[in-house]
Length: 112
Image 1: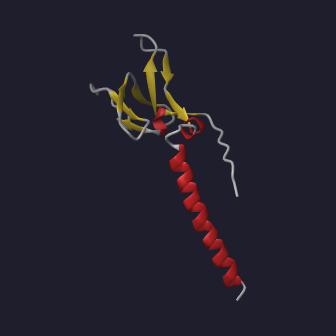
Image 2: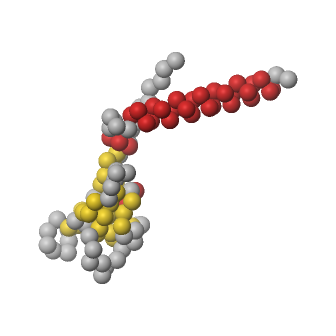
Image 3: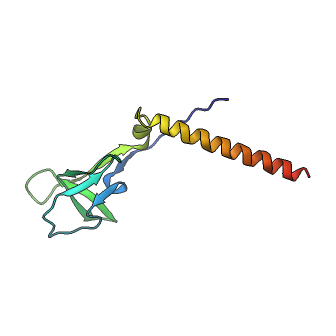
């Protein structure tokens, strides 16, 4: 048996990842930190603003406006990472085996 996984999707806002601070803090002096990967958190030149929910922005100039929203990778980009693929394949195989066993037991129980 074989399967093919196709993933489509837009880039994700940095607010979908671990961001410190989680809410806007205008008096904050420390840099905004974001953890896109599990291996660490890094400082970025940006800030958190509440525009229909907290989101991460950066300024294009030294002036107050314009601001630009910051984005991380999309789900297809994360899945395409060669370090991630073996982990995803292993988890998919475990889930498949577990579900297959469950379905076989369910069919056998119904036959009694």
